[in-house]
Every structure is written in structure tokens, then in C-alpha cells.
Image (tube, rainbow, N blue to C red; front, side, top):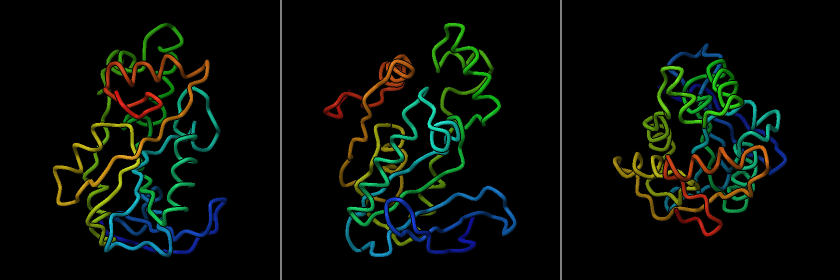
Length: 198
């Protein structure tokens, strides 16, 4: 995987350089890095690894907290002159079609983890080696990681990138995602209390 192109993108949170990464220059869905123009990679960088969630990020679905997490992360990295890595790992790596099938099972009473298992899929199939490769290409050596997910921390700690601190990205639950967030906390170990602890 390599950097294919970089361009300045004015956003609601300020101007970022969007960098597209893929093996193929014609890849229609490359991984993305949104890099603040004033990022200082000689110091720990405030960084969010965000896996694509079309329903939450684009359409504002209330079934998850993904869109709100992305918004909060973008605001923070704009303030701290950091980076958001946007990985094309829809539905915790199972893809949009399977995610919608899992939603149907959740509507019948299964939780988000059991729905994936019922479909013969992993509970969380995401891979974070991609994020490490992108950080290395950007010259990032240490980070303040914006996450609630212990798997992300573990993946980065097994690389040559230093996790200096974890910055919680906790979103207030709503009626539509309360059970989903409880499953993430109880079965997947996500840090979802308001203090950012288990």
C-alpha cells in the first residue's frame, strides 16, 4: 500500500490535507488520512483511527455512535493539529450488506456481537496494520490515540508507534443505540463510561 495522491480539503472543521492510500492508483475506495497542515510529527500527534460507517458517518444513523465520534474527533484534531485515519472497514470489517443483515437480526433481539456470529462472521474483523503503515508513511512516531477501543491500543502497541496516551471519545447514548453501546462495553471491553474507563 502506498500514497497515491494528496489534496487540500476545506471542511467544517478547517482545512485538512486528504491523502489517499491504496495498492492500486485506480482503487475506488482508498484508505484516507486527513492531516492538519500544521501537524508536528516530531511530537506526539493527536490521532483518531476511524473505520468507515456509512450509515452513521454520512446519514447520521442513531443505531451507533460512529458519526458523532467522527465529528468529535475532527473537532479535536483540528484544535490539536492532528490526524484522522479513515479506514474502509465498514461494519467492523464485515461490509455494508452484512451490516444491514446484522441490523435485521438485532431488530429480532440479537445483540451486535451475536448477530455477526449468527451470520458466520467475526464480531470484529477490522485490521489496524493499515493504520500503522499510514502513520509510518506520514512520519508519525508517537500518538495521543483518540479511542474507546482496547483492540486499537493493543494493535498500535505491537508496532513501533508509541501510544503516549488514550483520549476518550465518549458519546452520550440515545434510545436507539443504548443497547448497542452496552454490548460494546460489556462484551468487547470498550471504555464507554463518561470518565473513559471500563
